[in-house]
Length: 517
Image 1 (cartoon, rainbow, N blue to C red):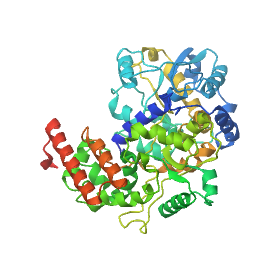
Image 2: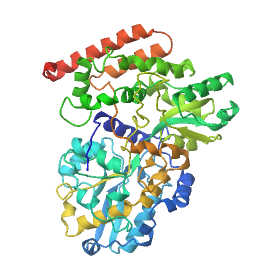
Image 3: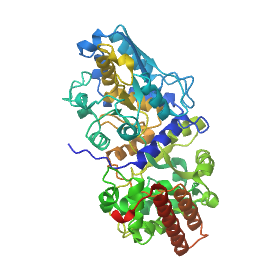
Image 4: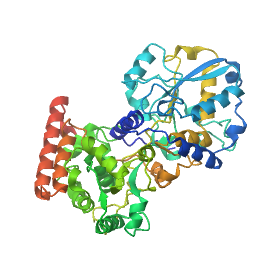
């Protein structure tokens, strides 16, 4: 088995996105579309594995011998939550599954922690140090492989390679999982410390009614079709898009494509998996990720073809500031297309939109779009398996109660019961914020076209992590260029100046000699 860990910075960023999407009541990002979720659970049940519902007892003698309470922090999927901002109280699926499990295992109770944490990473550290960590807890792969203290999560690799009693038609538990995600999220030693069932997807969402008014029958599949559709919307008197062009997001689609053949070089300077801040600085200093390479700025004119059809109001705005206004424009039916994360359908449901919502992936570029493309499908370059169905089991060192004879086996049996295609689909789709990515699962209809993103390698390329100001500087110049207030020549000079400053700052702060690379 190949174990690839091809991104450092992206998972951490998406971890933040996941928390924001599930914890911001103001945006409604984690609103639970109860009717949508319930329908998805029932109508799509055939796509999961029905064995789990017909046999909730498992087959582990140790698990059935232990009696007690399993405490679980389920983050965005916490059922009947009253204390966690952004989670609606009518989210019940995980509680329903727990009740089913308890009925088949008399003496075992499943308790869901209904508590909000201002600094979850620190909470995990403190609780683990005191031996009081939750038995099952939300933890993303990048944190388990690096950020969190070692030894706080059970190595689940052994169980991945054995049968799951609740999936009788698979020889091993791993066979039911997304093989790409399993491989991509393994630790450098090839170990697995959580089960991963959902995906942060990003896409162009569109108003089907406005598309129909403009005479557009189908969603764009290519870059040329996207530009053509935007121009048709304009001609029909419809604003194609209203958005701040987020450099941090859009650069990944283009740079991941243009530099795909150089990924291993860029990610390899520090001899560790993924593109680190050091990798970024070295690549900049070597003339690879900087304006001396035509690929680095070559996508700006290509992207401007699209933004020339946008509402100009937000082009120079800070995405973090004007993003809500731009999203509200779309939800109000004032604009036809909006690029966002997989939480948007929940936003739309919460806003009570009347139009039919559709979505399509970021198109794969062709040579007719730009000679700089490698043809790499970079539709998943912004998202990733960094959402909320990411559960780890505490070790006895991090959770003293796990020393009880038979408890570890019982907790893992509960995780196996939860970790079946049918149950993953039901839990993820009820919430509606993310995409279930196991092979025998289907996402809600509003996100059915986004499922393919979870089959892509985690090989995103971006710049902006090497200094505190670099991302802001690039965003400012990007907006000025796209709005027509700066030429590509001046923009290129400004970008190079920002890159040079970032390298110098990194060297000073970290006492780094780049000549050794």
